[in-house]
Image 1 (cartoon, rainbow, N blue to C red):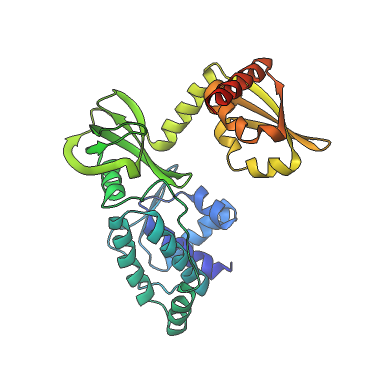
Image 2 (spheres, rainbow, N blue to C red):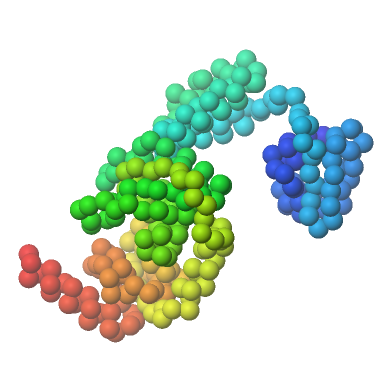
Length: 317
């Protein structure tokens, strides 16, 4: 990136956030802090109303805006890809908001870029592989986002896995994340008086209330850090298994869900080490999926438990 493009990109980033740190700019553009300071001075000399505070960052005066930005062909391509993901992986309200935003983006594209975007759109398809769910409907994600940003209590009708009836929940959502083909929210549940995970497609009705949070809550990142620390302090159990190389390839996506730590190559097998708090149910039942192509190195107790599970299965068969 040449200096002109970098300075323009810095100005765009300054308009995207209230405060931008010089360290973040240096990391994004892979330049020194000295270069960032020089670029900021160039913007100030060009008449851009900036103000900064040591140790905090730079801000741009409210009301200052660039004229409409022209997107490159590569940026337009990224927008089309995001649009396809939005169509399949979010709720109705978010899809509508993104569609409206895309019209604005396309309106500032040059004629050739508009043709390019139109043509490319017909060549991208996102398959939704979720077989157990009809996906998220309505405005579930939108309400959760508003609850998080406004620090409000959310009321919802929720049906937990394995339950026949729905329960009314009041939660204080602190974050939303996407994992294994599903959207989830983490929030403080007033019914359970503790933090709980809720799968978005099991929420049948949701609405934002006027109630404020009972107290300050951590951000999603802070909560996950605390959760990881608590998990490490629990009674973790070490497991070592040896898996055929051909089979180990198919375990890469799921192994982290079961406490994967490391792996080493052992002749024609891969020896994997795990630390888990759910040895008997979670890990053992996952292991049964590929048990004919693996062996348990330790603990010895796990071998006996697997045998018992197999005996129970055989009796039922």
